[in-house]
Amino acid sequence: GKVLGKRYEIIEKIGGGGMAIVYKAKCALLNRFVAIKVLRPEFINDKDLLDKFRKESQAAASLSHPNIVNVYDVGEEDDIYYIVMEYVNGKTLKEVIKEKGKLNKDEILDFTRQIALALKHAHANHVVHRDIKPHNILITEDHRAKVTDFGIALAATSSTITNTGSIIGSVHYFSPEQARGGYTDEKSDLYSLGIVMYEMATGRLPFEGDAPITIALKHIQENPELPSQYNPSISKDLEIIIMKLLQKEQINRYANAAALIEDLYKVKNNFELGDMDNTLRM
Ligand code: ATP
Ligand code: MG
Ligand code: MG
Image (cartoon, rainbow, N blue to C red; front, side):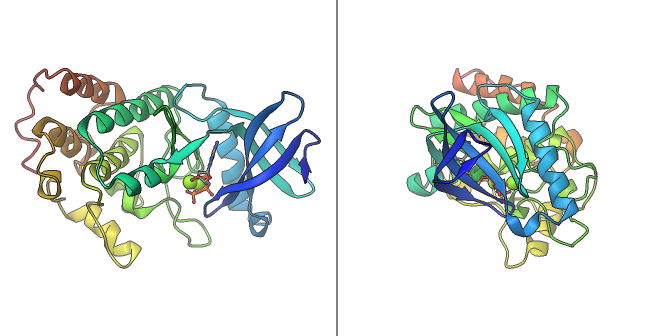
């Protein structure tokens, strides 16, 4: 088959999003599988997107953590721009949710903790992901979660709308500040993780709509139904964590990923969550 950079032999296509196509490949030199993300050819003349793609490699390459997909190499040849990364044999969290409908408490706690650990590491290195969603979380057969797709992590502007007018990221997981096109920071990732938790707990999204603008406005204006409306077996303490992540004001969310991890630990061990009485009254 086709060979990239003289050492990667393309085996098959394994995925594709808005911006890129992802292939499984083999690194001949090290005799291991890798995943290669290639910028879609229609975008190579789009300076905005090319810049975004380069920044994605930089952001991801600056991180090294067991819950973040490891970036090995980047390359550009004959107008092909690519990122070589750890090949994760598994499914996306989106597929896992689709198959199971709802996840149980232990699964939710376990996956959320792993994603929060990834965020803690990224945030400590001044990288905000900005596109946390189940499609960007890979789950291995032994239930390890790995965050990928730092595509808009280093986007210099806080804007979610490009010069050409297309929206970056998935509006279902936008924080209110992202939906407003305002200033996004670490807390925006925490909100998006709250949406992901909501989806794991209920099998549905808190805000739906026909047009992106409708969904964006709901993030800004509407309070979500409590997860227990859709899953009566969801425990109160888990629900409190989800609602604390989904607070509209950044200041009312967890201070950081570490604080979230602390509460996940408490729930796991049946310790009481402190001082959370107001969280469910939004
Ligand atoms: P988006 O539209 O979400 O921005 P994208 O074009 O930036 O997508 P990615 O999200 O990075 O592309 O990858 C697309 C898909 O390819 C993923 O959802 C996943 O199914 C698969 N994939 C990505 N990276 C890997 C990897 N390292 N190992 C295995 N599969 C992967
Ligand atoms: Mg993606
Ligand atoms: Mg992306």
